[in-house]
Structures are given as C-alpha cells and as structure tokens.
Amino acid sequence: MEERDKSSDQPKAPNWAGRVHKWKLARLYESHAKGIVDEDLINDVAYTLLLRCESMLMVEEAHRGRATCPVCSGTVERNMDKQPQLVCNCGWRGYWHDYWMTYKGKHLTAGGLESFCKEFIQRFPSAKNPSEKMLLIDWLVHRFHWEGVGESPGRPGAVCLIGSKSAEEANEFLYALTMGDKTHSHIRQEHSAWRTIRDQQRSKGRARQEAHAQGVAAKRQRQAEKKRRRAEKIKSAHEKDN
Picture (cartoon, rainbow, N blue to C red):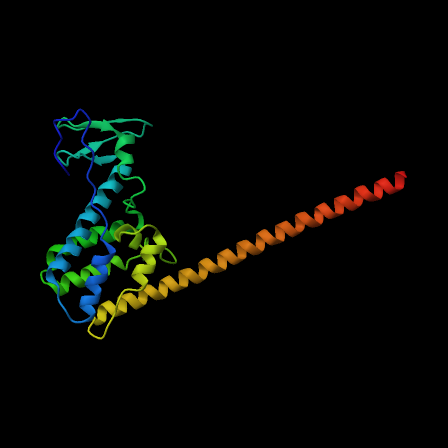
C-alpha cells in the first residue's frame, strides 16, 4: 500500500498487485524444460504471485466488511450500507464505492482460491532455493477454484494469476506451457492432471451447449407448430363462414 499523497485533496486509493505477465511465465517454463535455472526470473515470478495473493486476500476481506487502509495497512471496518464512508484511525477516509471500483473487473476476488493463496503465502518462506520456488509457483498456477470442495473443481484459477485479456486466453496459455525431458517430474504430473481436468470441463461445457441448443431448437419447433395450427384453425373458420 502507498502513502497518502498530501499534495492532493483526493483520498489515496489502494494499490493492488498485478498478475504475472504471460511472457515471463512462458520463458520460465521454457528455461526449466531445458534444465536452465534462471534464479532472477524465478524470484520475479514468485514474488509477483506472492504480492498478488496478498492483494486477493485483502479484497476478499474487504467484501466481508474489513477493508485495508491504503495508507497504514490497518483494518477499516465498514457496515453494509449502499454508500458507507470508510474512516481509518490514521486519518485516511474514503467511500466504499470508490474503494470497490479500484479492483472491480481486475480478477482480484479470491473466491475458491482463497485457501490456496493463504497456503502459498504460508509456504513461501520455506521455499529457500530456486527449485523449491519453481515447484511452489507451478503448484499455485495449476489450482482450480473450489478444488477439493464438492463434486468437481470450479473454473481454473489461472485468470486471477496470469495476465490476459480473457479467462479463455489465460487457460489456453497455461494449457500449452512448455514441458520437456528436463522438466521436473512433479511439474509434468501437475500439468498433466490439470489438462485432464480442463479437458473434462471442456467436454462437459460442450455437452451443455449442445443440450441448450437442442432445447432452443425444440422450443422453436413447438412454437412454429403451434403457430401453424393456429393459422389452419383461422383458415378453417373463414372457410365455414363463406
């Protein structure tokens, strides 16, 4: 979080961490597949994900009525009025709607990734060497929302972690990540399992679309048949009158 800009009368806005650039993640996996350890790039990606997870958890807390002050990082309690004012003990103040607009549409709501963000942050200090950090990075980007909860995983979490124009773009990027003979066996297994689940989700999605299309076609056919019968009935009535 940044300090208050005293040269402006506007309240300081939160500064949320961005997603990992695709090109960085692509280069990281390409290097790893060749057996090259790019420690600087690994640290760059790892810390970007760390900050992103922290921001996502802050947003999740804000939804629950506990916003994070952008000046002192303290907790600002809010009620659930339509336009409550946020007031921090440090002197910062602003409106909830303005605060909400700073992360709207930026895929910052943790949702079903909340437990994985917390676990990533908890495990991060223990990842001392590049290999451990690489495995931790790979573990996080291959998670699904609500994974392990309910009958099946939800949507891939990649859209919240990897910079892209759409969820499908992020998922397609992750789907095509480079794997090689020198890629760590655990990473290959993680990626293979992710692709299997993603393929199953695609198959179910196509089946739902087909079922919907068939339902729409059947409805239109019934409506056309109903209209045809009505027209025949009207025609028959006119013929009787004549």
